[in-house]
Amino acid sequence: MDRRIITYNSPEQEAPISLEVLVRGKGALVVLIASLGRGAEDFQDLAARLETAGYMTAAINPRGFGDSTGPAGRTMADFATDVAQVVQAFSQVSPPC
Image (cartoon, rainbow, N blue to C red; front, side, top):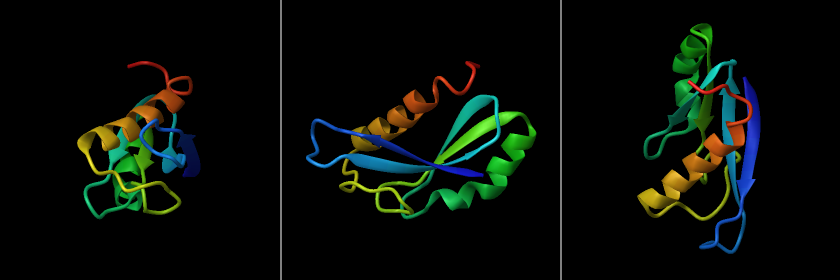
């Protein structure tokens, strides 16, 4: 497992947002999104199985968990922006499906 930090600036926020992403495997990208109050480590078993099946997984630690920083996401748009930033960062690493 590899830990990566994806940092981006949001026009709505004064400070940059940094997202810790736990990465496993190579292949088509599968993004794993933790539920409320949970961290990316919850996906270790699933990520290992997907890696064995030939996928790359990117489990996102939400803002405030692990090494992810930035104002807490308040809307679904905030969470969607975080996921989109991770997908964009990995789009050149992972082949399309």
